[in-house]
Length: 239
Image (cartoon, rainbow, N blue to C red; front, side):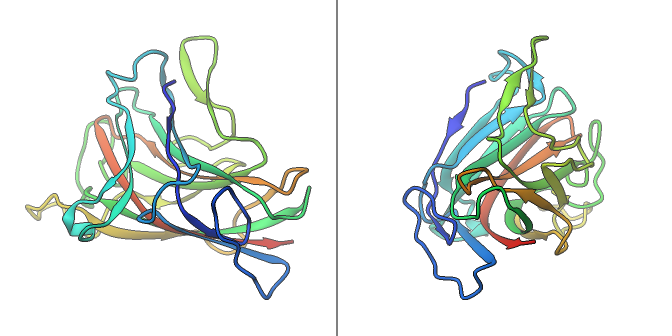
């Protein structure tokens, strides 16, 4: 797989390369705030659930780039895009962060802000362009990677679940549909915020107190999805 590697400036009580450390009054809670407008710092992008060597056919791309004007004037975001010929394309970004207690279980709360051009209630090939694309967030001791399964496909090495179902390493936040009705003749981007319920997802830190954070889209829509990641917040609370 052609991994597209980018970096991102973060504010994190869990420390990472180039990040700022925030003093948190609660020693059992760690908070990460990410602003994708601020630059790049060690975030990686990747793709899975597609055939080996088909990056061009699937039109896979990722970059830190200027946002469409409707998402903000002179602002940047993390753009990732792909054409889902397999009816199962997974597109993700991930970063390793430090500062947790080693081998300790934490509850994770995710808040994710994205830009979506997929209107709600529309029909699409294989699935809806909005509701047929599932947003996921996760945390794991293992670096999330797409690996060749030996049969000519790239599959994830963690349990992200499949399409609208979450897994042990990732939880469903919602779907890609924005608030605009399908009948409206406007395909511009709108902002959308997605969150999980407190206590709905937990993961263990590694022996060095690190964890890999992941955000991604799991698609059943058999055409192109282009998402802009705007910002995010992750709160890790010790159990």
